Image (cartoon, rainbow, N blue to C red; front, side, top):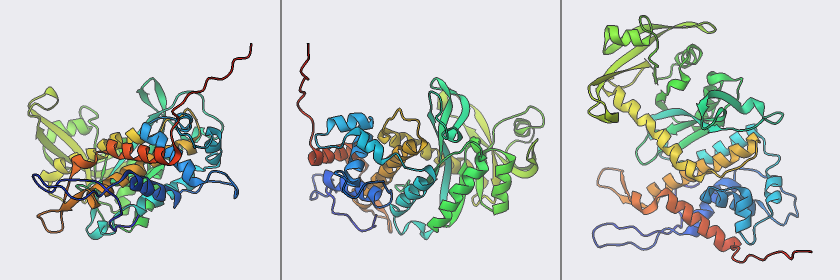
Length: 400
């Protein structure tokens, strides 16, 4: 999407008792979402098909806005295609090709001025529970993990997330394969990062990426990073290091039966809880760091901003349409639509629902004016105007 101000309409105050002209409309929100998807995500449609990509994506966006299924979305819209038509258009979607298309759509939604300075980026895993038996060819996308929500099998998605005030975009997302490991996942994400052409300031990773192989890959690449280290062991482990040495940066040997040993630096920082989580006193945390570009005293605060990726995931989870399908391609598409909508929302807030701030080059965002749920309501209303709604239920004739 272009970084120029779109022809979209909303009202927002610029001061006490003042209002601007309307600047955002539901129809323009829909046009922006359709443009982001139809331009990059390719659907298989016959040349003479009654329904084109616009109608197919409209159904998917409607299901996303209501967090419902394709079947229910088609049933609610008067001029929507049949659910089998929608599913048929998505039948040939391949995961690898779809990843490229979705990440291209995410890249085009980013402001052109975003990469003026090196960026701080977070990496995270999103687990979606899976129930039932996998179909042939789908097993590679199913991961085993700790039991959660009645299952220990999950679809997993890894994403790059920008840590920047009012510009918290998802930069790339990939579906995790069972056999590639965390190193393979991060390597594929890194390729998408290189395509963006941005400079990295620091990478923040959670405990799920803790391991010798992945840390070795990061160090060989020469990347600046901070990774939360799990408190393991009593005497010689991370837990013992924390208790024995206290705050500071200490050398540590990380060992693995498969990947061998690796010399790393572990930073130990202390933080007073001050009643957080109902606890008091001082808590110590350990991080594996490499070429960390900030002072040690800033480590806790910098890493804490990484949790914004989990907050963003909870937001775009509100726009992930539901499905009982076990096809990895369809599930990735529904998740990708939710991420694209979230990026659109972040861009609209910054570029449209805002005004120049007092600081140099800054903007003051009217966050209350465009909540994510309002964007979804705008989206649903625009689709209902274009495709109509079913407002009459006709009972079938019962044959006796």
